[in-house]
Image (cartoon, rainbow, N blue to C red; front, top):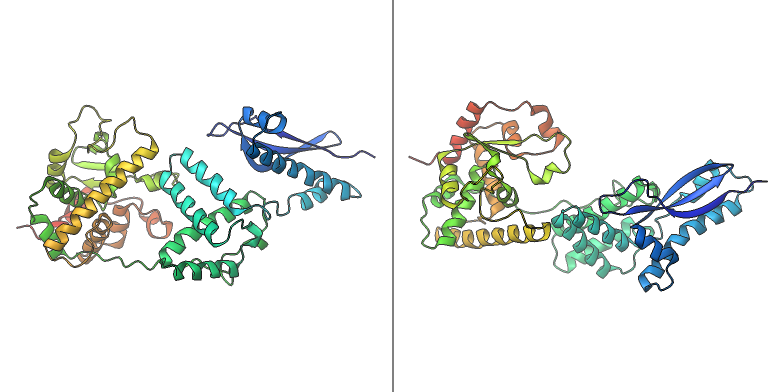
Length: 406
């Protein structure tokens, strides 16, 4: 009787963005071949070193053992089957291959992928989650993470002084890893610890306080003596008037985004996830133009950055560092301004965005207009209004943001 055979190989038919190829297990039966993925990707050179190298490092030896384990499981399943059929084989071979994998390896791999894709902030979030969970329970496997495990982790985090917002951020990363391995067929739904009647990720409890129009008027007319304070105030007001734009998107603006009296840009946050990008359109008021003229770069061509923060030679790591640095400068200086003006509340870069939305709402602007202006990607609140608003309507609505001006 014919017997199925197995082999481990590097599938070089399609290269991944990071220059690696997937390691797979090939099963052959009666001239038919099927390929089963493993969670391991390697370059051609690394695969040769790991599988056939004579002088291997400890990490290479460990990786070979892991790769061999997938083929070993295939062989064991084939040996147990009295009659080989593809359905019987797959039912046993594909069942919960990730259950015994350490969750921290999945965190590590995901963080590497994000860094290679230039998503440094998200990668850092995964790395923070990894460190926290590793401190709570080292060498935890997917199979170990149950609703009770997650509830105990939440209690441990809160006891250490962390907010539910932090707990929520870390566990959303973990939940994404579970969703990924289940979607890839490495784990069955029975191991999924999240959801109703299981464990629900807590909702953050941040208090988001918008400034009043009176407070914004105080900031508008305030004349800082120091240059950094003046720059911070102007940048803060630019974000407020520019549809609550965040620091990263402001730094990424180029002169190609300015089309006459309209500033048009896409949010970096949604550009990676939305198939159809709806740009945010901002009517360039005289105040916005004045801030650009005062602090902006001199235009060389359309690819010139509007503000002198980034340059084309920066990699993703240094780009993120400079954006964070500017955010700290603005927040530190605006904290001093708020104290001097006796404004109750945090005058942060995020407050500029929240205040933009709240002031428009109080002025009578529709939720639909605000949702589009903010560039929200939530389908339930935004997608039915993608047709947009007329520029004249935008001009009228934007006046509410500086209604205190005489």
